[in-house]
Amino acid sequence: MSHLAISSAALSRKLRQFVDTEIIPNEGILAQGDNLARELTLDLTRRAQQAGLFGSFYPMHRGGRIASLVEYLPVAEQEGRSEYGPGIFGADATLDAYMLSHHGSASVKQRFLTPLLKGDAVSSYAMSEPDSIGSIPATMQCQARLKDGQWHVNGRKWFICRAQLASFATVVARSADGPVNESLSMVIVPTDAAGFKVVRPLPLLGRYQGQNELLFNNVTVPEDYVLGSAGQGIALMQKRLALGRILRSVQWLGLAQRSFEIMCERIHSERGELARLADKQLVRARVYQVYRAITSARCLLREAAVKFDAGLPNSVEVNVAKLAASDAVSEAADSAIQIMGAEGLADWSPLSGIYRAARTTHILDGADDALISTVGKHLLQAHYAIQETADMNKAVA
Image (cartoon, rainbow, N blue to C red):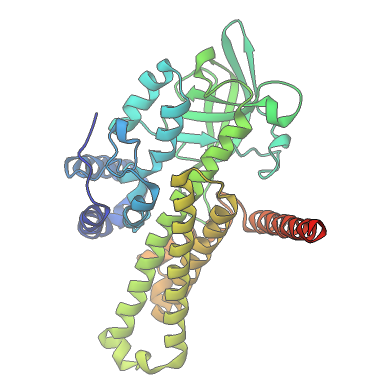
């Protein structure tokens, strides 16, 4: 499978038009999550594929169109302009496409990766657990033990995206006793395997957004369904985070930019002119603050992406960019609702869904408090190291 490369600017324009003309007018139907919504999603996905808009940042040798993460950022922002865009354009599968392509066995690639890249399969990532601390991998209790050439997976996971529709789940489980750096593994579990069960949907802020609780009751899968090798779970989790947080964050900027545009359109509308909104200082301040938040987050994401493309350490840049993108979409949605008034709170307004999604960004993909603490620790360590080096240089001199 291969595609001709295309400039990110041209692809962004095509995506923007598709989102605005094909997806946004149908968001009311897509939000229902019923059979009609699923049929419409499949139809839109096929149309996106026909238009050359599907899987833009898949590995180039696997059909991707954009070679570098930096070039993909403006494309991803357009994919994220609607809550439903990442699923329709295959962007939700990008991270799994990379993980399976680089770390999957031949059988994993044949059974799971190939249909995923074609849009014929849905992936999910099962890490969080009801009785563990999400930011502390050592507290995970889900087990995957190797016996007679089979992994036996037992445990529970929750708040797992897309699990109800997924063809397979990448399960993070404890595969051995000992230090956490050597005892966690990622095992691919097909959702049609005996013992796999979607226990219940988990609505967020009053609306189901694809999160589910899962049960693994002695699910058995072949030995080569492990990603990489047994015990590499922590290292693979870090690789997922390096790319995953950037991908999610830039999609949030798509929602932030859309909220900004909705706000400005209301200000310049007949009703906005009647209320003289453009003349009010607090309104102008909101416009400025949202613009600054979005632009700042874009710059931070680009810095993180540049280092990713160069293969350089970028954990601080990624975490700061994630926090900034989360703040940007939250401020943009909140300000747009404030300008719109009660209409912005209504279920028929796109801002209602964007506002809910914005709040979840402060928890998903790393809670704000945990990331802020981690970044602060790294910055202090870096400062101390610089001071120590400077003092040593003075002593030598």
